[in-house]
Length: 388
Ligand code: HH2
Image (cartoon, rainbow, N blue to C red):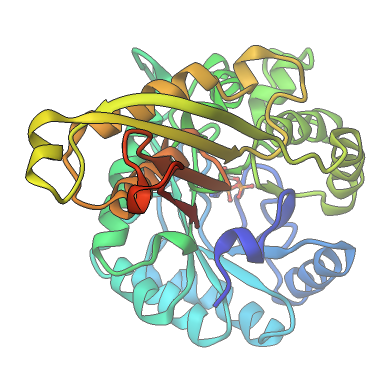
């Protein structure tokens, strides 16, 4: 099975079809199964990589619906789409997810990040489905009553890191999981925009990020209506492009064609660039090696690092770029943290941690021992590891 990055290359669009009478922006529009199916097929034909079908509104102030009611809403739609449109099921209920996956859905989008239903993780793991873990402060009924954070980006990232660890421990491979800061879920307007501005904090967890800003009320308010309940299409597109430029992979949107057109332009501007941060000849003292004297006396090691970071930095904003001093410090810190017998293990551990910390797509770590004469000859001996 493809990893989530392979299945959903940057940028991919997730179309939204709410089979509900009360969703905040398309409530009632797709409540009839036939209308929902037609909308899903249209979104797929327009280029959506996946269509997110939901039978329960999570808008601020909403109460939940029963399993029976949620199934009643989504099952006819999923039966009709039956495998010819890639579907994600927007649910927090294991029973709904199970039925949707049986009917061909490939992703579970859980706005509670596996906190609401203890059975859901097992259902996702067993089906080998993709999973979206989303952050929410509070619950839909009350979440917009005075949401507070000390530092919204790090708190959301810490929460998602914990939920990611939980999901992996439940048997869901990390390569199938994406993360979502949950725009509008227990957040003020300022929190929503700060989360996009500081997306690098979330990207550092090493998973693709999904953003759902489409039509949300913060957009309407920034665009000039202080009482807005929804946001206009133009503002939704701007938010999606801004999120993409800061590293988001999947954009969850109601208006697929318009978003894809705008994202195609943003992508052309970025020029499909792949930046590699390169560090050469980093000299780090360490106590690695199979010989007792190597661990006792220590020696210098030379590191070369290549870190592929997509187009980060092409914006010419320092905050978007990967800081090479931070990469160098991380190599030193990781070498100090543990004694390895083998350079292979040392280089692999460092490459994996660099991928995770810096949200890189690929890491190559080369390590050599300049003090050692291989076979008694002049020269350098070492290893190189490439991850993933
Ligand atoms: N937003 C909504 C619902 N599900 N899932 C993810 N992963 N991310 C989001 O931002 C997100 C979501 C709310 O939008 P919508 O589906 O249009 O409305 P409602 O919840 O009222 O059905």
